[in-house]
Image (cartoon, rainbow over all chains, first blue to last red; front, top):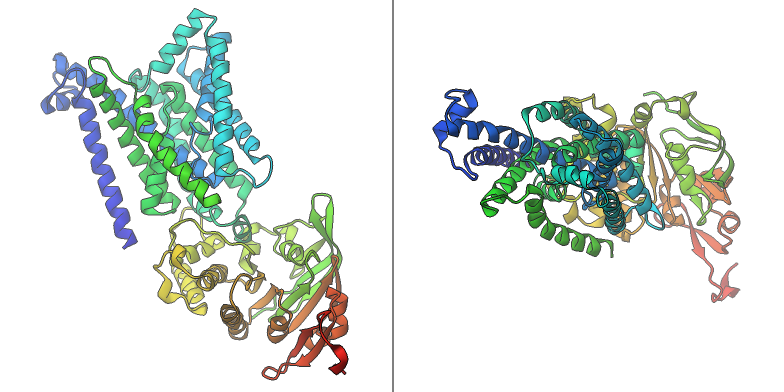
Length: 332
Length: 269
């Protein structure tokens, strides 16, 4: 029964993913036919204009897939580590932390290479995650959903102001920053993807290896300890994986919100809380949804385009409101 | 079957700078049901947590078969000592069978799927707690008594020779309390599992325990069989409560009748 459900979820996910990839390559300011896509992928007929359009859309699509999967899996990890249904890289302010450090990097250290962006984003994200979590743990009851959301929002706002402080006075920083922030998933190249991929794959593989531990961690802390789980170590490794996944994505795409909240929550409601399945299916659906958001942005924003981050926020905000209301009712 | 001997040597334990347990020496009688009695704040739960290594003692050591728990690997301890904590939580929507399977964590090899032994252990645990017919139900739909049986089964799937339970009957009505304690007694008699519980109900302790540890203010003040411990004198010593002890007409174990300040004591001899 449950096994069937999981098989169905995977099958539908993969079909949706394949369709979204095809649509992402086909649609846009210029629509192309299926034969052009095949030509583009296999490098035939490279002179034709349509094949070049396809070739240009391929990195964008692949990056969308990686970014969506990374953010969703980061969401799964953060929700499990904090035992909190509304934890997500954007709500916890982690993505803003990554942004701030990138801005500082642009303004003061003149960083240019993508690897420097990723490194500095990782440091910023990690510091912010630790800070927000500790802030939310102050007072009674530990890091409850509401307190995490509030401290995440507060820190996020403060960091956004800091970003403005660094960006506003210097027009050259402003230009670089805007270029980075507006880049969305459209501005990526094959080189960027090759750079990103090892980190993403490593973090996802390690997360999957931790899935038994994460399953155990969702029981009470006392039960988990009595079962012999090293809670601190599991939490630490999972947090680093989560931060790697969201910060590297943010470094290349700019902040994309809500994917990490929405996808894991929906998937958890359907497949339950087995992390191996949760991580894999969140990855598949996250990739598909981000690609679809990107395509929608291209269609709705014609003749230009809407950033995929705006699209995910439009879809994700109502889900967030629903979740926070539910969490509030639970804690009362 | 080898005897797993669990001993507390001069345990001092507490939270932060706050010392709750102040120098306790005791040996858990193997293959018996022991109950730790004591007033609120006497350190019963702290003692239990120290035994399960949830809490590191400030000084002294817990020794399992001549080996200090501090020197053992987490998973090796988890194969010998199981625990039902006071508050158990489960992820939303998880099924009974899935939850019990999580008790196999200490046995699972890195990245491997469940083995035949895992399935057998889960099945036995569910049989012992009589929850096989609930296997595919979601934990959220169960009654309090059923949930508690599921969480005990989780600890049983761990296949430990020693099982600690922190107030397993709290929040359950009297029928469920007896049901849980009966199942635990059956487990003890059939599998010779050493059981150590914190209970609040003195009469139930007397009915089910082979051995009782009485604690007060972080010290062990008395230990022995129920008939040694359940006397009006010791009860007054532990709880500061006057009582009359009679014999339970059914189980013949001692039974206390608390004396209220409104009771008329002229009839009491």
